[in-house]
Length: 130
Ligand code: SF4
Ligand code: SF4
Image 1 (cartoon, helix red, strand yellow):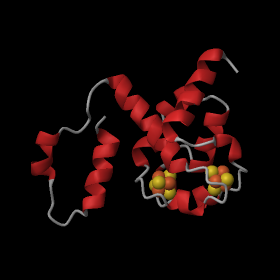
Image 2: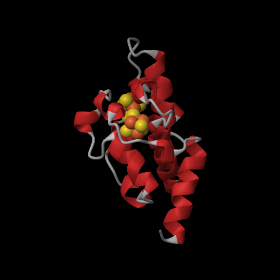
Image 3: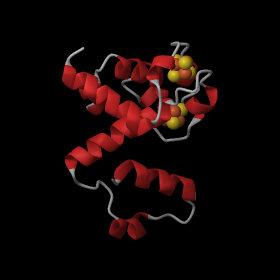
């Protein structure tokens, strides 16, 4: 693997606190993912692409914006790999690279629906702000 891609993959493992090498490619994470149909790269494939250093493709993927941070994949993974944390790490890397928050606190009140669960708001902040 090229040194740059190796470093990128190692950084994603570090940020996510997850060891992608433990993945046994069982696909349980993808089978339990409610956003799977919307994703261009499924959760188990996401893990395997980090393992192969394909971070640029992951950073350009739709999946990082489709993941709802529900952690169903984390619950189901028999190896403690945490695909959600890996997706989050790639998403954060993209946002930091853009150096620009997608969602700003001052925009929140006008977007707010009182019926939105607080968990969804926290998830949105994690997803769209650095
Ligand atoms: S955290 Fe993301 S990848 Fe994992 S099951 Fe939920 S939507 Fe799918
Ligand atoms: S559930 Fe865990 S071990 Fe199975 S494919 Fe997904 S990340 Fe890999």
